[in-house]
Figure 1: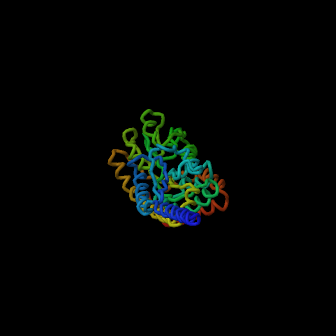
Figure 2 (figure 1 turned 60 degrees about the vertical axis):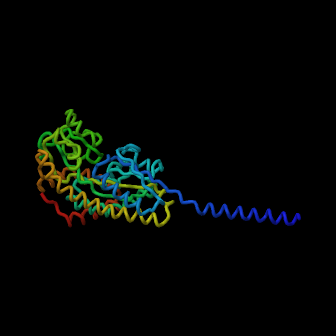
Figure 3 (figure 1 turned 180 degrees about the vertical axis):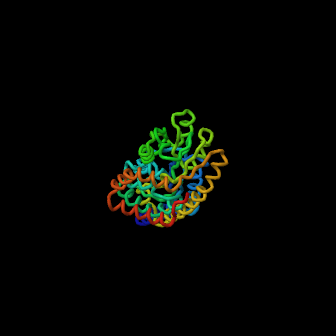
Length: 342
């Protein structure tokens, strides 16, 4: 009797264990949420392109992972983006690449004055520089760049026309990055640092007389209401980046890693193509808004470039010989393929 009781107890334990195993194995995997913090508002062309990337990823990740977008600095301020993704405060971020040149010289590659002839050359450069960013970010910032794309150069919108070097003298000009600030000072202007969305208000209140912005931002912020002239010369190339926390990336199964990298490359191509198209349309749009658009002649552009060259040399020197050589070669190849057109 005692033996039979022991057998029954052992059988019950085995059955309970099997039930637990079956129960655990039948539970669905929990979806991993990746919060992406970006500074651009809803409806911004940059945001729209990011949303396309996210939609494809969320669809193809089939519930294993989901990217959750937080726009307009609602989760992280631009200045805190690199630290936030490094520490894992958020899993993903988007930011203007050149903003973080003070953290590492590699990021200055995005905004070396006159480095790209035009938007096509700028887009081509993003493909070449992404691996350079990856090498530095994985080693120093516990993060991995997924997408890097042109967002059109910083040119100038102003209350008075700017056509020659003399027009820069003492010009109160909004700068949106360390590179644009130095550019303004070298040409004889007076740099007024302020976040790029504040340019409209600065011009309206006459705190500034000009603003360094991409043509898309001039249009989006309706800066024609407070300024009359636009200078276009692809003065300072500009790019944006999406990055992921390296710990979050390393935890991904291989299929999801491959997916996010693959879709990142596809997004780089499609977003570059989008901004190339937009850059050419923007001149007509600016003119239709009542702005006088002046395309800088090559001879004048070359003269300005010579004046700013000592600053460019310093940026390259800070990168180190090896990195600077790579960046220059990437730019040379792109500019040879896409020469400057007035």
